[in-house]
Length: 117
Image (cartoon, rainbow, N blue to C red; front, side, top):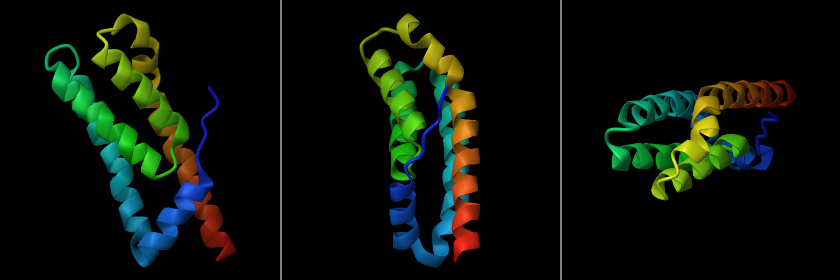
């Protein structure tokens, strides 16, 4: 799967947060993991909590330019809301890898920005 990040969204957050960008980005990465764990825990037993957690993951990912992750979370959120769990199982299964790869790409972007500064 081709993982995409939106460098303009990252740059906008970088400009907005200034010197706090790096620490907020570390927090964002931990939120990706925390929300995924909470989603997995709620999946199948507390559907509304699972939907809320995947919605939050979608929003956080979009805000920090993790395009593929945000898109996947949107598909999962919609599928769960429509009761189509089986149809989205492949996306649910791929989610940990997409989170991991998105973080790697954002960190690579971050290193490049530091080199160019």
